[in-house]
Length: 424
Image (cartoon, rainbow, N blue to C red; front, side, top):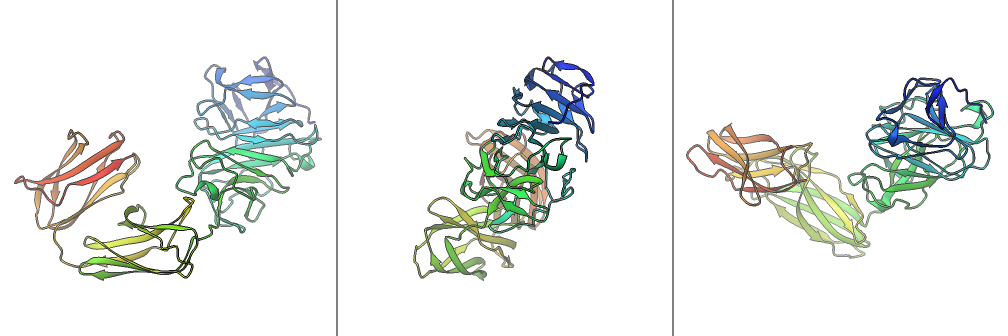
């Protein structure tokens, strides 16, 4: 085991090392020989330098850290010496992203990690080997994509990488991580723990190991040698439907969607989704799948306002897994009656609510938002023009719930129809 040099006074009875306050500089190390409660250290943050030669909070043999939470975690690198199971309490300082490892083989085995938030393609892994960007587009089958939420830098003691006399390649160790919210990335069954081998992300899970796809569920895998980072991936989904085509065309000033399947295995339904920015999609229709082994032909007519709209199919199987079809776009140039569309729906606190409508009216109007018991929550005076209008409204301060948006002209007449939306 690497000898740990004690250069500073103890921060608590079991922690010694080279640091300033609760910060470990590059090349420094604070050693924990017992049990350190992260939550009771005088409110100080636990931070180590993120560099090619990081600073480390180190746990020796059976030492551990307790009191870990989103508000109490180590923003930087944690190192573990010895052959006992261990939980690395790493995170961002305000978000905990633990890694748990099973017991290594040798007492000299040493491992270190840190959570690096953000897209691995742009947020560099600072340590060798394979330091730098790890493209989320470089994947090996069956991995189809890698989450941009972040990655864990993974360091091993093999060849003294973590100090003189340290060992360990990581091979055979069971890794379990606490995941960010992955509901928009993959169903639970499709999640996989992935490792960066210098050229691509590879599957470490080999099967469905996630306990869920929401915040703080766990995902596990078995480590192999020559991995320098760990992230969350998803596998190539087995399509419940073989889609031969998906097209959009105009039909009496509306849009006609057609699609054909050549086989349907365990298929449940097709959810038709519409968007006006190719980013925020809203469900507008649901059509049961026929379940035919030889496929089927489907069509549905949807209302489309003037201008460009985008459509896709969310193809669901009976187990709740889903895949998306390619996106098709079509422009409506008909002179239809007034219309109104609100999106995204549901809307989150981080999105503006967009109200798109066409009208023959021009001048002042009042845009009002009411809650489910008819209380007026927002009221804005706006100027609208004849033709197509797009109004953005900030709904950050609205609590979660159901709401109605209404547009009234200066002479008291309703423009379009009252629209319902959900605030998440």
